[in-house]
Length: 283
Image (cartoon, rainbow, N blue to C red; front, side, top):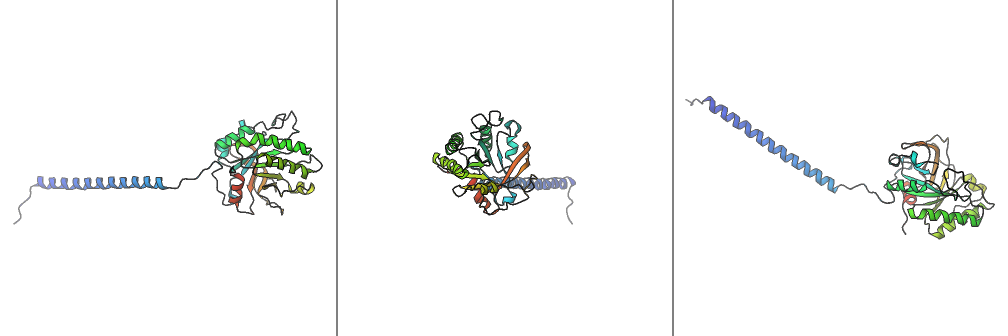
């Protein structure tokens, strides 16, 4: 016959048993927590960070899906730009430095000697946000000497900012032999030390005035399609171009007015072209 247990011993045993379970569970949870924290710390310390460089943090895998490249001048007032926001929506910027040697005094975007009134601010603000910056000059020389003078002014105003590319914006016939004038500008710019020199030119204008692009390091062409603000037409040309300005009516957060939007060519390796146009050249 079994000895009868007193109730007080039964309750005592029950409380001790439950207490041991709770203590064991707490120890296990704490161990799991420490293990998770340790794992997260290791993961964070060994994860490959996104690379950013002086020339820009962007890698282009598909030209049609890239953030647009914009070009700006004194007509886009710095006071109207939210640089923090706009910089998040672009992969590069080309800033006008010079509007030509025949700028009129009443031009609100340029001073009397042809330098853009906003170029310093544009360059500094975008570079401060790690946006790669190229520069351009609107070409208006009416003689070889005048072209060389514009090239000198353009270079002296630009080189200190280490632009990724120097572009000649050729849109007007300002001398009889435009090809000779454009070449004089390019050659002078190169002699002064500019390494990457490109030309912005419409294909019809180029053909009409027999302007050669062979000595330039890159070609940038404007063809707008319907100019709807979106990319809707590839250039119809056999010209070996690198950059395409596809609209003058683009809209991006950070600026309330229309912008010129550009993409690299869809006919070449987009990242190779992008890195060539927007990487600061070695000395």
